[in-house]
Length: 431
View 1 (spheres, rainbow, N blue to C red):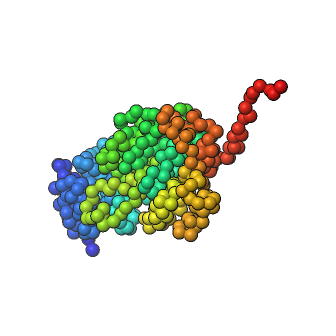
View 2 (view 1 turned 60 degrees about the horizontal axis):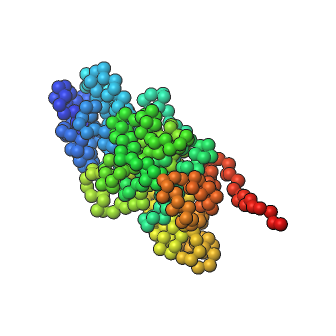
View 3 (view 1 turned 135 degrees about the horizontal axis):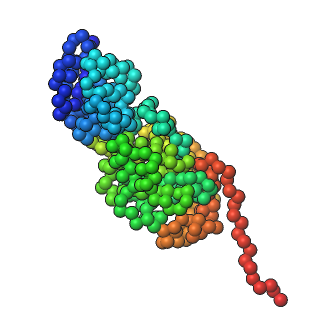
């Protein structure tokens, strides 16, 4: 059976001659569709009628997201570049195209590359319209030795809707890890309303994560570029700010976000990502198109993270949301086992001993225990928010700050700091 191939090399002078040469029976390749742009190519891939795609590097709107969607649909990719154009070849390889040939290669050589790409490609696992279809492909080769993967860890801070304190925990984790001597990068990836910049007093109208994602999609993101895009809050702590407006969420394509996290592993020992809450994947979000998915970035971060910290509130409504969110996470990403953190623990909303009661509720309805309780400290969090500073600066003896320090040491893999002891007040001696 002949290999069914799509082509998308429109505008190249050599296109017609190449297609004609490939269609010769002795090559075992049949061009079933000549696509004029990336959208048509992705639509053709969704039909399941092709095994491979032959692309030119200068195809308009071609990026890592499109290559990842083709791979997710089971369509292997071979790239063609103008002879001698090394930059285009490196760009295609950065997007995950393993087989890159000069456009003047013989038809037989191109046909062999197409067969090798199909034989070595991943099996079809998702439709191109799946929110996770744009995740970076596994087993992507690094074209240059210096692009070896970094050793840094990625921690995703996620939780249900209802303001359980995800951003407070994410900022606290990042800040405390940096104070423990771990070089840390804080990334705001909340597509519904990232506020990390405001919490830290950074008046930034140019979201760093969106700029990094654009560079990644263009194959131009490296460690130096990522460092330049991140704010240095203080030595050892960098911040990649989030979207200034929620309607800009299409800028955070999942495959680009994954590439940013891969680069972050090289830049910092620990990357803490503040995620959005929604993992929805119902039929209304999965209709037959390759349109961007709002929740795809969140799913991509959770799937890429080494540790997922799930943050829930401590009142009855928040606990109900937490139980449902844990079930949704289990359905969407069954291999992810989160570190469960219950935040804003206080007496009042839950009768009796709040820690014991909450632990029993989650054990009964979610089938798991609580890894960390964080106490409510409204005075400390209000002071930090009002001044745009971290808890460690405005309330160093806060019980919430101590809990975040211990949690940061746990996720960063460093020795836990000794609890701070309150100093006795100095006063005039009696008598």
